[in-house]
Structures are given as C-alpha cells and as structure tokens.
View 1 (cartoon, rainbow, N blue to C red):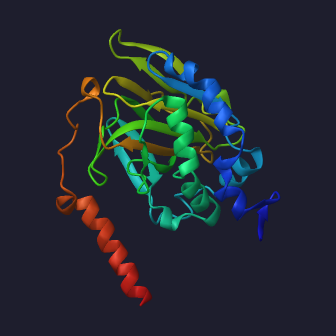
View 2 (view 1 turned 90 degrees about the horizontal axis):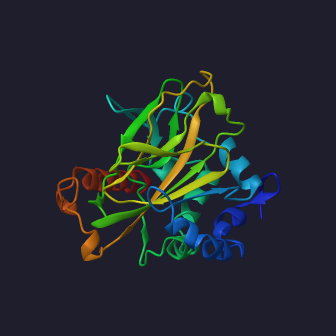
Length: 268
C-alpha cells in the first residue's frame, strides 16, 4: 500500500481507532469523564499516534493558500474560519474524517461518556477543520442542540488540536464555564495532539474568549467533530435552540443536495 510519509499508509488512517488501546482507555477514563467539573469532560494528550497527528498537521487546510470551501465565521461574538465540506479535504484529512465518524470511534465515545446510540455527523455542521489566527476569538457560549439535517440532538463534542509547538504565551485556551456561578472553572491549553471531549447540554458553557496573540503566520488549528442521538431522556429534554426545520425546507439541506447533483452532472 502506498505510503503517505512518516511510514503511514491509508490503512493506518482508516483503522486508526481500531487500535486495541482505545477500548481500555475509554473504560479507564469513564469515571473521570463523568465527574468532570463543571460538566462531564476529559482531556486526553497524545490522542492519536504522533506520526498521524504530524501528517494531519502537514496537510491542514490554509484559507490564505486555498480559500475555496472555507467559511468565515465573524461577528461580535466570534472570529474564525472553518471548512466543513470533507469532499475538498486533502486525502489524509479525508481519511481521518472517515475514521472519526467510524463505528470504532463511536463505540469508544459511548463507552467513555455513557451515552448510548450515538450517531456521527458526516456533514461536520458547525465544525470540521477549524482555524483561527492572531486576534481571533470565540466568546463563551452553549452550543446549538439540534441538527436539522439529521433531525437529532447534539450530545458530545470531540476537539483535536493540531498546531505543533503551540506556545502557551499565545493564549487560545479553551475555557469551561460554570453558568450557575458565573465563573471560569477550567482553562485547557490547545496543545498539539490533545483531545478534549465533553457532553453538550444547555449549560455546558465554553469558549476561547481571549483574542489570540500568536504570530501572524501561525494558526490555532482544531478538528471538531460532533455526535448526536435521535432521542434524549425526559429529564434532559430541551427544545431546539433553532427552528426545527424539516429536511426538505432546510436551505442548508437543499444546498448540499444541489451541490451533489451539480457534481454528478459534471461527471456524467
């Protein structure tokens, strides 16, 4: 099989989370995850093999070199860019996007979080390859809780940081916030190959509110994947934050279908 470099192959990416190390990791961290303060979460360093992380970093999309496909998320509460369309990813990142949506990774997350019947989001709505640079920020917030394309409840976030040699003086910490006490409880540095996994609820406030102070040519890169269930327990039920769009009435869903049809017609 063709090697990508650093002795990695496509098979290494596809089978990434089938390693025998992930099942015991999930079991061993279950209690720590559940007791996370201010809400269930875990920080895992060296989440993927180092050579995989290096390869992902080397092919991470750069909006200045290739702006096509990037979305600019800028308003009073946020400044960052992201690329959610995996069809445009470099091969290594595309393979990773399949792995992070795989059966093995979902079983890992179900074991770790105790949340059953998780489903992944192949659209990476609101996530995917995210990138922020000097002066970018993300104010503290609670995530949207309803995926109108999947018609499912958002339950778990997985963030994987992919900027090598991140200097702690540049800032960019992910902060976890106790909304009841209105205080910051935890600050997590975006160190290379560090994963942060946490449960999504209406009071799971978090963000990166301090504007980045990194060099102009450095980006805080994080791959974000979100996981859903088609039901929630009655005591966890909250009305969707956004309008509950029917798939056929969703502008986003229609846009996805139209792009696919255009691609099909161009290839026929």
